[in-house]
Image (cartoon, rainbow over all chains, first blue to last red; front, side):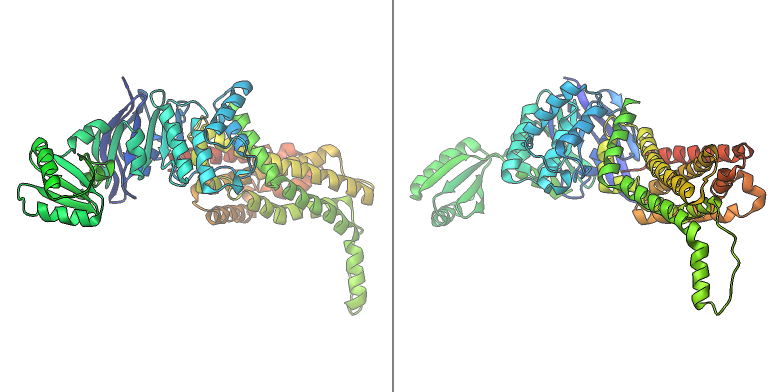
Amino acid sequence: MSNAIEVKNLTKQFGVQKAVNDASFTVKKGAVCGFLGKNGAGKTTTIKMLVGLSNPTAGQISLLGEERHHGSNNNCKIGYLPDVPNFYGYMTAREYLNFCGKLYNFDDKKLKSRIDDCLKQVSMHDVKKRISTYSRGMKQRLGIAQALINEPEIVFLDEPVSALDPMGRHDIMELIKSLQGTTTIFFSTHILSDVEDICDHILIIEKGKILTDDSMLNLKKKYAENAILIKLFTGEDANKFIGVLENRKEFSFERINPSEIIVRSDNVYNLSKQMMNLLAESDNTLESFRAYTPSLENIFMEVTKNA
Amino acid sequence: MRNFSVFFGKEWMETIRSRKLFILAAVFAFFAILSTVMARYMPEILGWAMATGGDGFVIEMPDPTWIDAWMQFYSNLTQIGMFCILFIFMNIISGEKNSGSAALTLTKNLSHTTFVMAKFFMALLVFVLALVASVLITYGYTHFFFGESGQIMHVLGGALSFTVFVGFMISIIIFSSTISKGTAGSAAYSIIGYFVLILVGIISRIERFWPYTLVSRALNFTMGEPISDFIITFLITLAATALLLILSIRILKKQEI
């Protein structure tokens, strides 16, 4: 599979501060790439450079094999949703999409059906009001619709679900998932659970530097531990079990909430056998017992803690 | 070219729905009516004022003519009319940059050149429509009150001269709006530009080469002075307009939106 996005040594400097510092990465065609970072890490600046709205201080960007420059108007194959989208308030959603579609030279018949499809995808097909009356969530939905109107090969979404309610977030995530394989999606967010479900590629940026550039699967493997997550029915049971563990120096443990404990050891196979025995001996009521795999949140915290 | 018409269509929708055309046309129409009526009745108003409060002091005023009506008309347009144009269009570029709508539009299949040129021609069209309406009103009223309004070709010559200058003024507003971050900066640069044009225009040696001459001579053209004597002024103004638009496009292209 060839690359949709290639970035080499991308740097953006504002005065003495480097908002993006020598970033290099590639994203394969059809991949859904989650671009993660804390507030001010450099996500929006990077995306603005990728879509040609900001001029890199150094480095190269290539989209679908074509070099990309600041102010480039070759935008037929890309879609873009900014973090705070703003439209022409005097238009309706349909009028705005009609305007966008005409810029891509769609014929009237195709454009009409494309507008219907896009509005349905973001659950706005029966909204007739002018955009000036929309809530932020509605604007974000329209923003996603306009980013998809030209059937782009790459879509850049900057915080696409930040203003949406849980149902709206779910719908948009499903929409992004449905595009997987046909459209390359590059989206920034700090809602890590969303990324975990749908992304096959993860980029983590912190203080302008790309700290992680890997597949979700590899990251899970890389940060997997010889650990078991034990969940007991009550906090009291957990207290009892911790009392047992404290006498066993071959394990280390961490209580992550009142009833859940992560137990670590060098040998995960022996660990599980020994834990079962200890639980039986200590007469505890076990709710669940499983190998511990780190969540993306854990990985993110681990990656960024020393950056 | 297709995308020019698409974006121009969007600008037209904005002009109608934001009532820009209606506001400018209403202001110009008001001046058209006011100018003729003022020209016709000003001597009588002054005479009445002198008779009632002037302690017997009398000014002999010549009878008003159709020329006075056009003089009032262009005087009003040059002063208040020009500030109306400035007020309506001062955020022509900066408004879209600040709101973020330009970021969405310019990451579509639309060039910076089309973006700026469509805005320029729409602003000019709005002005021309308002001007045509107001010139027709002035022409009709002047004919009604004074029995004549000047030769139609001369009237059109005056209007053309004024239009070419306003085109230049719009390019100044576009340039100001491009280089400034907010509406206030855009308005300030445009007003400074306008006053520089007026003040430098006072120097008679450069009159023929200075765009403001097209405004100060609009009345003369209406009265029959041949436009051909000022072709160089027209050409210089058009060239300056083109230069400012090219600069605006280049600057916008380099800006981070």
